Length: 371
Ligand code: NDP
Ligand code: GDR
Image 1 (cartoon, rainbow, N blue to C red):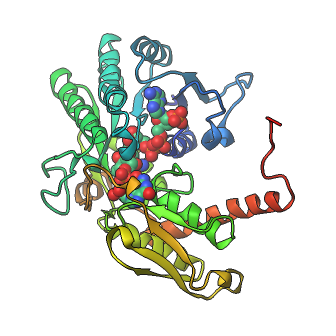
Image 2: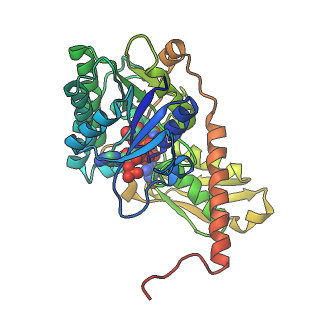
Image 3: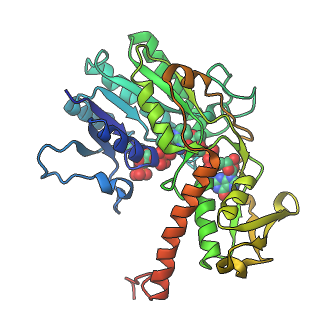
């Protein structure tokens, strides 16, 4: 019999990759999406199945992490074997502006699922995956960070996720539930949200070389992150729910890189060399060489500036994960290294931006509805 999975945050980066992955494995996949005034299913449109399709194995439900009765109904209707709780207000910077909502959705939202599983008598049937995060480590206590490293969250997002982490552990211990945390380090892809730093960079690099934008403004260029590819990371989520015993796992590459270096790699993939001059808020990036004739107009141009508005009140300076347990117990191994990730993202954004430039040149870039 095919297994049934319920995925929250199905319209997000990880929800889209995980849905695709589980469908290929023969699962019936149910996803929870929020009502929005605009279409918000772009990342899953390629696997969408019309409600009139017979024997469909991908179904969407309207729902919200802050609405308990709605979640209870969806779980009762779908009777999932596995729940992947990927929905969250996931932007660390934005969580400083919306701390209460973030606590409600990311912290109490996790409790709502666990409690629904318990109330519906599904503790023996339904396995639960919680999208925990390397942000839990926050202020550096030790490196590399592993399952035993103490937590020190540094944002309302991380504090909310700390609650999600511990309530998952507590329900496992109190009610013998198969409930697990995947402590995932940063993972990116061509469908990463446009305001996270990697995608902001790869989009901007593509736009700058094509003459659609002059500069990119960034915050802390010295932050170091352990970046992997989302495609690799959703496989770890699946593996975490296939073990004999529930447990918590760090998923990471074990390599850390500065934001500044990510920028350099993104330009380098298009044959451009960027040089950083100055320090702190005065630091700027200049293109000093270009192998590619098409982009030689950028030579000696300033293409990057630091804007303090992107600094966070409390920052996480250094993340580097130790994935030894996941590799040993789950047999998990990432396929992408950082170079391959950067190439995937820059190539994809270059294609997207060429399309935008083509439309702009043809006079079709924007339609004005308000004239
Ligand atoms: P995204 O921001 O791309 O996706 C978040 C998803 O959650 C979207 O589908 C969003 O809907 C949905 N969502 C947000 N708020 C609510 C709500 N109140 N009710 C229902 N749905 C909601 O995140 P990622 O895919 O990158 O991350 C997935 C999960 O993993 C998140 O929990 C994140 O915090 C966590 N995580 C991510 C890491 C990463 O590097 N990507 C690393 C570690 C943990 P909509 O599309 O409508 O906005
Ligand atoms: P992060 O990712 O906070 O690690 O959370 P993000 O890409 O937002 O920031 C990474 C680092 O880059 C610095 N930075 C900037 N960040 C953004 N967004 N925009 C900028 O202009 C900019 N300039 C510098 C940040 O200060 C930070 O140090 C992500 C999210 O996916 C979380 O949901 C997840 O839990 C963690 O990764 C692991």
